Image 1 (cartoon, rainbow, N blue to C red):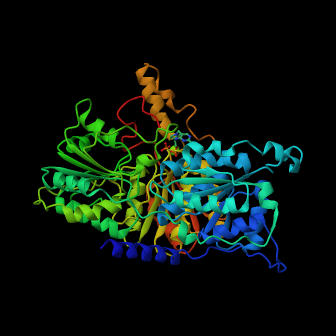
Image 2: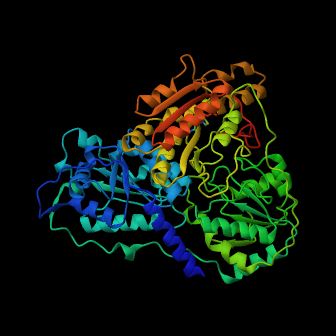
Image 3: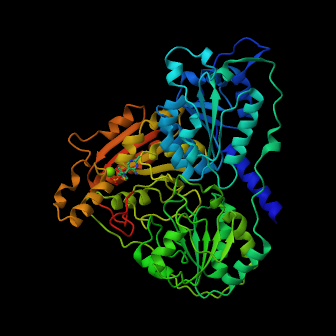
Length: 606
Ligand SMILES: Cc1ncc(C[n+]2csc(CCOP(=O)(O)OP(=O)(O)O)c2C)c(N)n1
Ligand SMILES: [Mg+2]
């Protein structure tokens, strides 16, 4: 059965390759036949050997050798370059691509300065546990070869230290064979669960050295990641026993794959156990949200009624839930956790000292350091069916007609316009309530940026759109204006390479999340809440977001500020994106959140 599943997974991966046709090419002219190669030619050849499809990049002299090799040695294909206007979007594009395909692509960033620009996005990719190969450069490391001034300011000792605390591994190889090994190892580590970005720093001197004939390329098949870890039989048995005997089992469906087969197995497990299931809006869709067993709309912080319901649980099965300790604390407070806890997560393999994205330490009764996709089918076979016990509960929000444009009216209009359309939601704004739209497929929604870094939305959307191009599933993002404004030049990469997508900007002309924080502080200190907007509002002048889109070759619609204009604008945007355009609709929404973005305390921040 396992072998069959593996075959199915490989078939699905191959299918994914075919559904991502090459984007618009920038084809180089052919040069003369050459017998000798340069260091960076060999490095480019190994990138092809490990099947890197794209390199999202912003150029720089530190890797001019590699740049030349991709263009003139490989002919700018496999990998193909995707020029980006900012390193943050280069990395975010690679993240979005991996979120959809679960495959690694590359991002190339120039010396210390490019890496500094990229660092926020690398942190997001780290927290989101997506595989990614970040390539960079320095030097020449040999000081005698440095050009005056510029090569000196762009050479740093231990450049990898800039991102070491939020990459899985980094290296600065000193020879071509060492670079082969470094790239193979970086790919293997990045693709081993828990997945994450790795960073290889390529000395300019090494790239630009003549190496004669191409050193023999390694057989990449022999350097693949290990098979997924399987649980110990005793742990599986203990978990199955707890679940089979539970009165109120609950499944927390967290970080799981985009596989449709694994989705069906999760549903089958929940149904066999009649377990209530919770999902998390920070993560990609993990369970059908309109299933009677789905307990509460996915949220950033567990809403109080969902927490109350969770307290009935006597056994909790946590499938790589991002913040298990936090949820248990929210439900049981200072009391000992009243349920038995089964933890299925390999995540602790990358927990280290600097970043606390590892979250609190949960109390656990059965611990399997495995991926949920491996454990769920085993549990499905091992648990006893429980009788139906959970009464189906209505999950739809009561309809809310409004004469104001809000995120809710935007959601309603989008839902109506996409009733017969396969869509992948690539981004949601902070004020989105998880009840606004149902998810019924692992690619209906790919989750958030991971690290809470505003500005990731446009790049992630373009990367997801790159992966979805030609699949028949349309990428649609709904994002805050702050998020859009920080990262919007990712649009140009989409228009330049012909990567269709639709972005609906929920434009409240504010960094509104922080207005709410100022209001909380003002109340705490008995100060005027009317001042919450100062230093937060993005108006006077209002920014013409549609024009920003048009200036980059995208379609720009809006501003849309009347309810009656909303449906036609969204329908037009969908039509344009279906016809291959990149389209932005500026929707002027009233400031306001329909969700609990504060967590449980006034001091919570985001
Ligand atoms: C890189 C970064 N800078 C600042 C913040 C703090 N921050 C959190 S939410 C937010 C506002 C985002 O604005 P927008 O996308 O328009 O969403 P809104 O809050 O208006 O709904 C800010 C500035 C952050 N999380 N990340
Ligand atoms: Mg805003």
